[in-house]
Length: 227
Image (cartoon, rainbow, N blue to C red; front, top):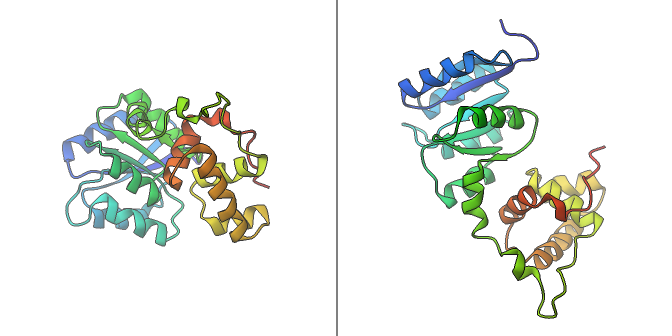
């Protein structure tokens, strides 16, 4: 039995040798306990039901059910397990779809062991984690900072305090209704603020806003009140 303060983790990957390597690596970490393994999507769902891990390391490409098929089922089951994608592939659409379906982080298998451990701890703590190299590729799709300067040379207007709160909640994966409930405002008001946010930041959709918020945290005035 592990300690109560340990991070309980399940590894899902169809390559047995890779799983064994991860188990050996993580066994050295006193704060992490590998409680289960899975070689395909169906085994993932079974392992989640049996072990209730804190964190799931999930490969996107597996037999029977791949990671993108598993993610919505995890969400539908209201699982408290945080999902960290660990895959051998980088594709912008895969990153967007993974985050949209509820993953809290995205890493490539070429990542260092040190960054993997940091990512596991961060995701467990409720933070989002996107590998620096992956983030760099994604940000190429976002408007460059100089494009946020008007023809008159004036900087783009900072978000208001309420807009900053909403942007942070969106980055945390909350729906419009969940944001409205947190802030005691109507869902219509949330949508109105989002239109303004997208216009000010020259963004097109929620995932861009989430990525922008994670990378350029300094544009926001303050953290939202979770109370």
